[in-house]
Image (cartoon, rainbow, N blue to C red; front, side, top):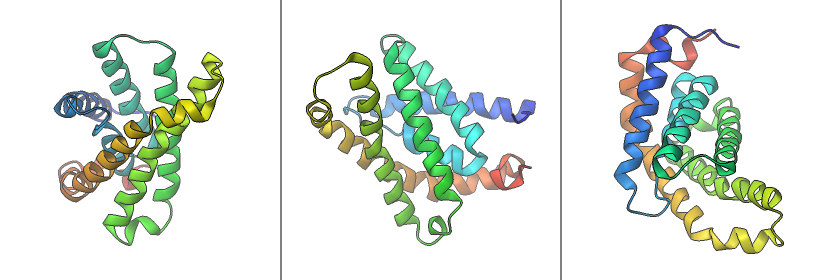
Length: 177
């Protein structure tokens, strides 16, 4: 387990607060959220451990704000964690450096997969009769998250990632041991 400095812990707390605040910007559009794109950006910039901690804190804050914590919180955290692990594996390939638009498209596909992973856990936990019926009912929401993740990741990677690399390079993933 990595040891985090005070600077990294402060960064994690501030980024989780910023992500929670940013999710309020799109709250009026169902499931059109920037949070997954932000989690992917944090993983790209500072690594899987930092991205995962920002994600867990943000999800807990969001669920406390919107109605409470329950089994769905575990499903959300597990689904996002699986997506961040897949993203981390993608970052190790040379594909992510080829074209920014392709990276954003992969991010949007991961956004679409969130609904699949979440539906699997929900159907299993609640013993729902038919996975496909449950999954297809949420297709619009998964598509909305897919589009939002692609758009926001492209914008974040283009404008926010260079700022982070310039202002706090000591927290960047490539500087970690």
